Image (tube, rainbow, N blue to C red):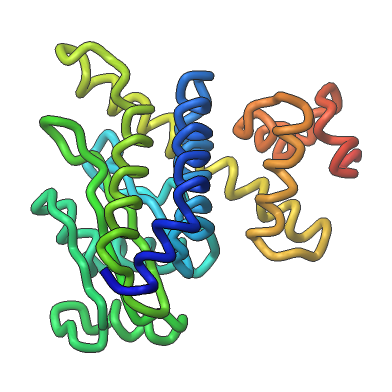
Amino acid sequence: MNMEASAFHENASTRVAETFIELAGSIAAGAETIEIFTELSRKCVWLLPAAAAGILLRDVAGDLQVVGSSSPSAHLLDLFQVQNEEGPCLECLRHGQRILVDDVSTEGEWPRFTAMMLANGFTSVYALPLRSRRITIGALNLFTQEPLDESRITVAQALADAATLSLLQVDLRTESNLVVERIHRAVQSRNVLDQARGMIARRFAVDSDQALQKLMAVAHSTGIPLTDVAIAVVNRDPHSPVVPMLSLEN
């Protein structure tokens, strides 16, 4: 084990444990799927560290949807893979296996995706499956500016497996139907959250990531689920405490 990997184990063990405890607590408390996967992407950036992270899930029609991202660049790269049917995430989902690329410039199968990655300043990419015993429901994508060692990839896969439990706390006989339903709700939540982020970004002249932080801060301080905060913002609900907190009164 090299010195960098050793330092990761020594200095990050507490943060890894805290992250698993927080994730387990969110799942046990019934947090929404969109909240869990958005937080997972942000935790990967903070913990590993990675430059950016994104999460894709299959919807009811079998199509891939971006349901969590740590930054606009991660969202863009994941959306590009879906729209162009090119990239490591699709390979990961097709085979249900990890796709690990330390130097994307040497990868010849995804020329357009590679060009976009390099244009955004990323040189390595790792696609890790979100899976249960029988199905792969999505993938966690990590974008980095230098290769990740196996210890970090193992932690990321463990986080992905733990987060997948939020969709799979069901009887095996009904697992597929409930997973589809929860993914559908997550996609709907993602759509309204994107609208709210855009409104907050324009209102406060901040970027999308900062807008999300404002929404999450309000959700945390009020105890209102993140999706409900986003709905109140989009609808400018006069009866919600969220609207005056964000100075969105008509």
